[in-house]
Length: 229
Image (cartoon, rainbow, N blue to C red; front, side, top):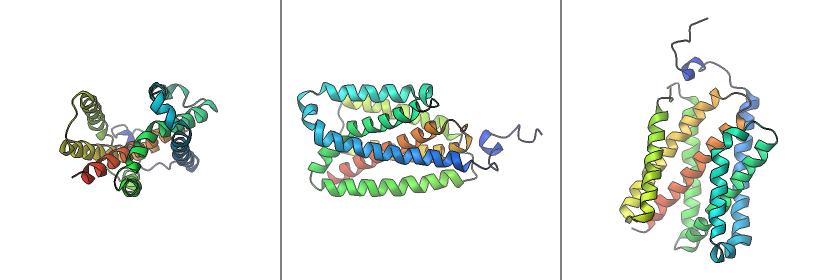
């Protein structure tokens, strides 16, 4: 009865079977979020491009909405059907906010090739670390604090970079660390899927979506910096 009391939550549940329905919901909404982001990129590129140039405050409004949704997700993530609508809306807005970066890269020298490489590398890296995180017997819960502190450090460095722009070499280092950080988050979050309550599938899907989105952004930035050498 008390055999698992001294084990970590991951170890205690290592032999438990994850509900296929729960995992299916997580992956379904994760996939739906990717599709929503692609739609957001398309809408922004076709219909909002000129508005972003003439009225840049619109982009800041989308950024604000994006932050509000992600930081309030614990409040609405279990409220059906609101959670599904807001999750799709968040992914759609994320696609809108990343569209200018996609457009800039696409218009640059070898931009389309860089975007293609970034997508392919992201898919391979995400899949590999996802399988590792989900199947490993090693308890990855100890990575939580390290990953969190790394994320805080990246955010602070990024804010400093707005006011004190850095060179291409530092950009490569910064982007490389970002790739490693979100690869770690992916492995951690895939193992953590086994620990979510049944009604928290949106939380799990959101975590995975943020992982692959940030992984793609940092891989793209790394490839761009390498291309400038």
